[in-house]
Amino acid sequence: MLNLIVKKWIEPYMLLETIKEHSSTEEFTFDGTNKAILKTHFLKQLRETKGFGLYMKNVNKFYLFDTNCNVKEIVTKAFELSDSDYEISEDENRAFDLIDSGEAEASIITY
Image (cartoon, rainbow, N blue to C red; front, side, top):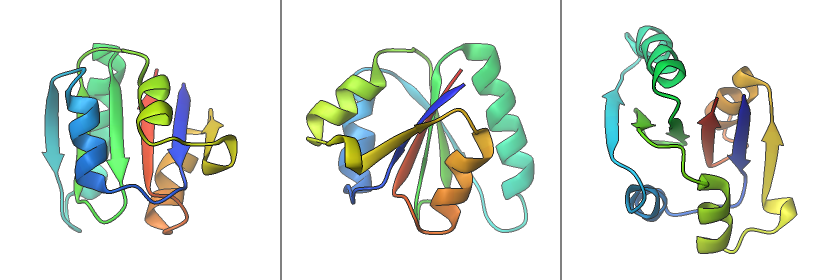
C-alpha cells in the first residue's frame, strides 16, 4: 500500500473533479456513528477493486475510484505540488490520522 498524503491546501471540490476526469467513483458518506464501519467497508472494497481511494479533510466521505490510473502524477501536476507539499506513506493509519488531526488536506490510498 502506498498513500499520497497531500499537506498543501487544495480546494476539495477541485481535487475531486480533477480525479473524476480519469475514473468513475463511488461515495461512502459517514457521520460520527458509522464512520468506523464505513471505513472498514471502504478499505475492503478498495482491496477488492484494485482502484484507489480518497479521503479529505472536512468532507465526511470516503471516495472509491475504480481504476488505478497514475493518480500521483495527475494530482502533483494539476496542483503543482512540490516534494514538500506531500508525503508518501505505506502506513494505512497515517493516511487517515493526518487528515483527522488536520495536519493534511487529502489522502489518496492505493493498494
